[in-house]
Image 1: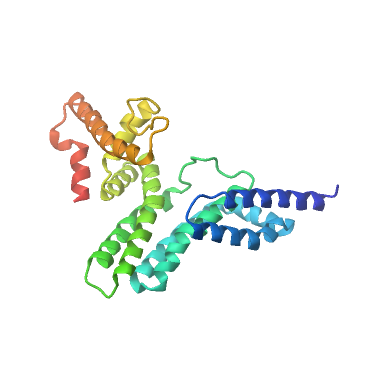
Image 2: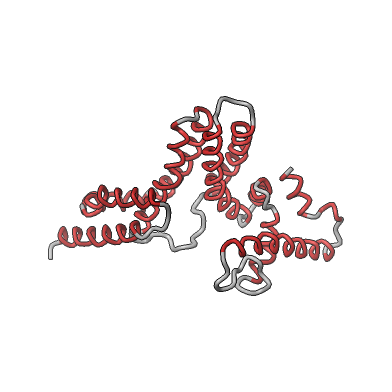
Length: 272
């Protein structure tokens, strides 16, 4: 069999895998419709060995550049949507939901794709930049959604959802990376991001409780088999707050430090 034939067959196999991944998505009907539309449009491109080969080479060669572009372009779109409103809000919502969801499935079908649960693939510079942009975006959100301006109720709701998705999908995992990085400045930035999202206690609960007791009854962030999402969310938030508080208080007493040095005071001060 010629090399070109092998490439074409490989391209078709990867195309079919990507199509199966996309069409099996769970979500609203409009997401499924968009997914099916993309399979019709993108299947021929995926099956063309020359195009697919170049696409894979570009991804493997410039993966960090691509990730940086996609992430920072989302920041740009959020700022544009906040400034101009209208159709830009619909564009940024589309970008952060359906388009990103489908492209994630397509990229995951390529060889050497990251395993599930892989860490947020950001460099030190990008992590710090996104950390700084988080607070700018948070201020813009409060100003445009809560302040007096020309935006209507529907536009404000759309902005709230779009920014919330960014904080959950980008800021949260980025903060997780920052609190695990070497360097006091990175860790402090991660703590401040979590605190601004009103979950500063997660830093203590994650590092002092989850890392030690993951998968056991002593870890509030480990769900029991069959536990529903909403019950787990309540258990995890309250349980993590209490477990982190106990762990930090124990460390504080052992180190003979003042109560004013308690990390929970920093979390509360940043939140307010």
